[in-house]
Length: 105
Image (tube, rainbow, N blue to C red; front, side):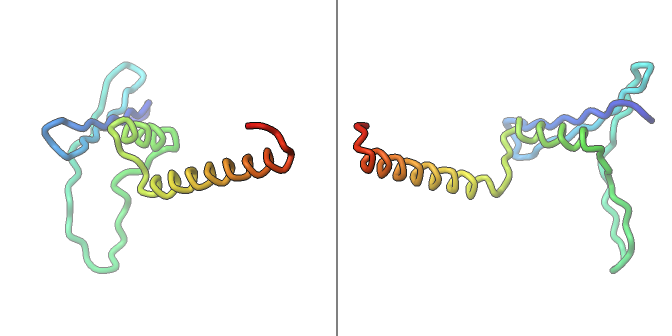
C-alpha cells in the first residue's frame, strides 16, 4: 500500500514499555496498520531481510515520537558534560580577557 506512513510512540504510566504503532493512509483515506512482529529462529549465517525499512521522513518521525516519550540518545550525557566544560572554559576566558583589558565585570 502506497501512501503517507505515520509512526506513533506511547509510554503508558503503568508500564515501562514504549508502544510503537505504524500505519499508512492511502489516497482514499483508508488505513493499513502494521501487525505485531513475529520472531523466527534462523540458521547461523542465514541472510535475513530487514523487518522494516523507513524513508528518512518516517525515520525522523519515529525519532521525534521517541523523544516525545522521554527517550534521549545514550550519548547525551557526554554532550551535556562537554557543553558544561565548554561553558566553564568560556567563563574563564571572559574573566582573563576582562582582567587583561582592565574592563570591569
